[in-house]
Length: 142
Image (cartoon, rainbow, N blue to C red; front, top):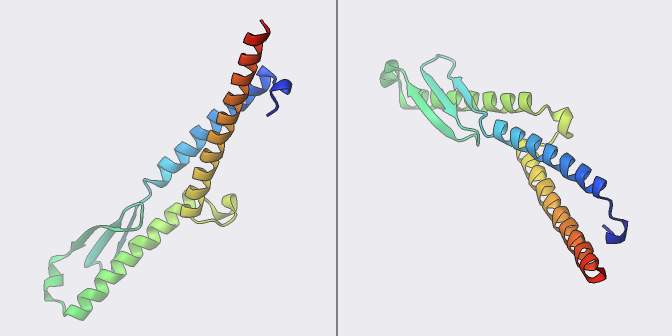
């Protein structure tokens, strides 16, 4: 921004738009951080829950699992965990429809939000530097 072409109305508009964008981004990130998933095995003997990162958060075994063969129980656990992960992925798509973000994953969107926030910070720093230059000129001219 050229300090000579500085217009206070432009700065107010940019600040207002930036604040609105940051609020929207923060809300979206908060919503993303709360998307969990739940699932159960086909027989219903095992239920699982994954956290917002897709990591296993809870695993419940019905009493009848104690009578299952190890291979059968392993299969039930895998089914439940995968169902929970699929549920979490579906919920993420509901929060961030792929068409809205060019098919980007939630991680890619989060990275993009961070890039936007970093760019905003750099722009604000540059604008504040320009304002300081104007202030110094005004003081030296006065």
